[in-house]
Length: 293
Image (cartoon, rainbow, N blue to C red; front, side, top):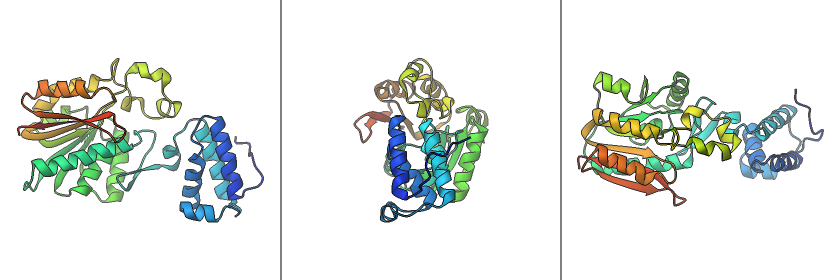
């Protein structure tokens, strides 16, 4: 049971309390503003213009609850139920990884390469492996409607979240439940473009990671063995069985893993043009392989 911490419910007092509380808990002091804006349905300008207004009782109680939960480490995105990705709002739950800005860069890089590699090709088969919330696959479909997009995941619960996002955002995509590329090896399907943001965090990183991530986001979407490369190793065995002669493969990787994953792709696809791409922070974050150029 929550013990209510304040009697006064003015906007500025609520924000001051939240900021102080979250700093004490080692969380982002600005999280209170984000939470309150969403609960009150206000823009940032509206919030600041109404700083001395009293909060409605229902909004205050919900705000207090969310701030306390975030203080315990629960991500804001799970509390609010969504995250923004590529200018769109995607529903999220603890069953899926929260979409991040780095993955937007993977999508952007893929779109640029698809445009260059397949100019004039009207219909391309696209696969988002380990789709989670569907952020990659749904965004690719909405940005390039000619793609025939398939979203796959080992988690049926994650696929239900991705389905919700596809329906709400109006993306006509297909869904497949299965382990990595096995369903497509079995069916004989082949793809022109395959993207994935697989788990890539080494188990040894667990000890110093934020509890906001390691204790709340799905473990199966975060960790991948001793060095974080287990899923990439599996991909290299399975990818040659599902890509077309001319294809694009793109991965998100952990900082410091770029050249290793690039080497794996070069071994799996001799002659492919493989490129490690840094993110906006200068860290190696994406690896693309252009196959059959």
